[in-house]
Every structure is written in C-alpha cells, then in structure tokens.
Image (cartoon, rainbow, N blue to C red; front, top):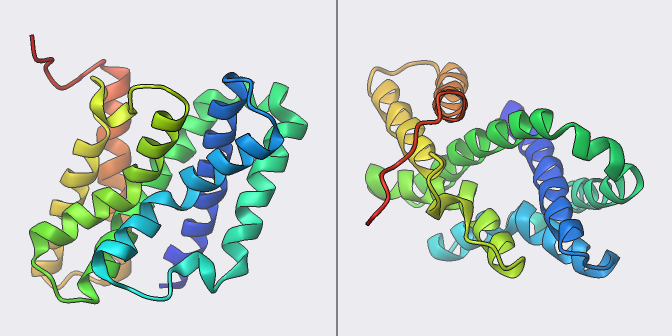
Length: 200
C-alpha cells in the first residue's frame, strides 16, 4: 500500500495544480484559486468516503495531503508561466492521477465489502468528482460530460483490476497493470481523437 500512498500524494499535488490553473484562467484571486485547487485535489476522495461512510476522511488525519495541496497551489502562482507551457506533462500526470485514484477508490470500497460493480463506480468517483466540482465552480461543462474518454477509462481500468484479482495476481502488480490500462486508454483516445458519441 506504500506505493499507492506516495502516488496518491503526487496525484493530489498535480490535481491541486490543475485546479489552480483553471482558477487562474478565470482570474480568481489567491484565495479563490486555493479553494479550487483544494477541491480538485480531495473532492473525489471526500465524496467517496462519505458515500462509503468511511471515517475519518483521509486528508483530515494526514497533513501530508494538505502540504501537497499547498505546494501545488503556491507552485502554480509562482511558476504559472512555466507550468502552463508544461500542459502536455501535466496531462500525463493528470492521467496517472486518475489511474491511481481509481485503484485507491476501489481499495477503499473493498474495505466495506460492497459488490465489485459498485467498487468500480467508487473508483471512478474518487478519480473524477474533484474535477467535476472544479469545472462547475469555474463555470465550465465538466470534462467527463464532454466528448473526451475520461470516466470510461476509469471504469475499464476498474474492471481489469477485478478480472486480474480473480486470477490471484500479486496485488502490487495488479495495481500497476490497472493503472497502466487507464493511462493507456486515456492517452490513446486523445492521440487518436476517440470520443463517446454525442446525443443529437
């Protein structure tokens, strides 16, 4: 679980940057951007824990999450000019983040012994809800409701996790493969401009 913990902190940091950039583009002040960065980073995990009735919520008992968010927000304000130029890099880390958060969400859901299909949904919630709240607060249509393949990649990765788990695959190896599946689907869909069909 240590590997996931450190990846989770990295994902929290990157999602804080993502939220802060979105806020900066809307010309919000430092406080407003900090709120958006915070919600983006921990919103999905908080909603997941509340739905699963898991207490205490992780970021309330581990200051490293708060420091990761603070560092992400301050880094964006201090080096925004350079960070914006690294959008492709941020896309990679954001994609890694949703992969990690999906697997973490599934693991958290398994603590309360729910059905696999609902555990996969909790994984998706963990990975995407923070971004949904961010986009709503920034007056944007949430990314997962647009044409890009985003939440679908999380669901696919979650399904792979349970398929591999049924073969008693080593858990750490299962984590890595499931995360790589999510990263692969998301990356290929962007490069090949694949998308879900629109309702017309």
